Amino acid sequence: MTIDLRSDTVTKPSKGMLKVMLSAEVGDDVFREDTTVNELETVVAKMFGKETALFFPSGTMANQTAIKLHTQPGDQVICDKYAHIYNYESGGVAFNSGVSCNLIDGERGMFTAEQIKQAINPNAYYYSKTSLVEIENTTNKGGGACWDFNEILKIKQVCNENNLGIHLDGARLWNALVVKNETAQQYGQVFDTISVCFSKGLGCPVGSVLIGDHEIMKDAIRTRKVFGGNMRQAGYLAAAALYALENNIGRLTEDHQKAKEIGEMLSTLSVVKHVEPIETNIVIFELSPDVDEEQFTQKLKENNILIIGMGGGKLRMVTHLDYTDAMHEKVLDFIKTF
Ligand SMILES: *Cc1c(COP(=O)(O)O)cnc(C)c1O
Image (tube, rainbow, N blue to C red):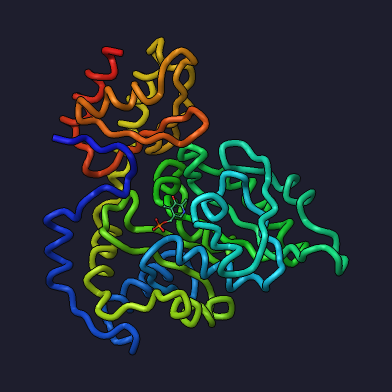
């Protein structure tokens, strides 16, 4: 039995999910005739209180489309130095939209309205035009940290005053909603566009959705096509997402609990120097300087426990719906021996 804690993307569709996938009603989504895709888009748009939504094959493509919709070549996007759009989307902001990023030196992937004010370029022709602020919740590289919604409201205020768009990379927004007892609606009221992911904590094989009102979203489908993201009978995938919305959000608390327990165990070990605060399902920790990272992960691997390095001496473990109670017990028992 391999215990894979590298990411919450390693889950496989459950029997229940597969069942609804196999019985999904589908059609050609390029003709917009896939009733299950249409249903998912309607459900998600409504959930966030927005006018429309569009299904994507990946979170990367949903984010990249959003950036394209908000910017013109030469513009600048404000985001945290840890942002997924900057670090892990293959330079897509430059490749796809011809924009640069003004990186904020935030805390665990989060920043303040004050920091945004400082980062907006003056309105002179020789500066690049600041046109978009991007926020990630929960933060991936920041260890699953959740934003303070009050700070988001302050940032929205700054965006309004400076005529800036605001996009949320909500790949793991579900985790934040559960932990902070927040609603999709309240995020819908603040952000112009929101991407959410179904293949992270929610256990789907594929799928993300970009949400927004008609005005900003009017070219989203064209951009998705340009990026090669049009799909045909995608209803099989949309059915999985609908199933996940029904069945797999509330249970995220179990992943969070397990992550906390792993973190607590790690922090008792002499080989571990530091464990970052654990708010959701991501555990990021650093080994003591005298411990070899390679050896540490190898030893776990020999015991069928897979984790991942984040660079800079940081290691990551992510809990998810295929990480069972039995696996959890085994992991805690094994970690204890270090
Ligand atoms: C995984 C992730 C994405 C991208 O999702 P893919 O479906 O892998 O392209 C975007 N943002 C964040 C914060 C993520 O963790």
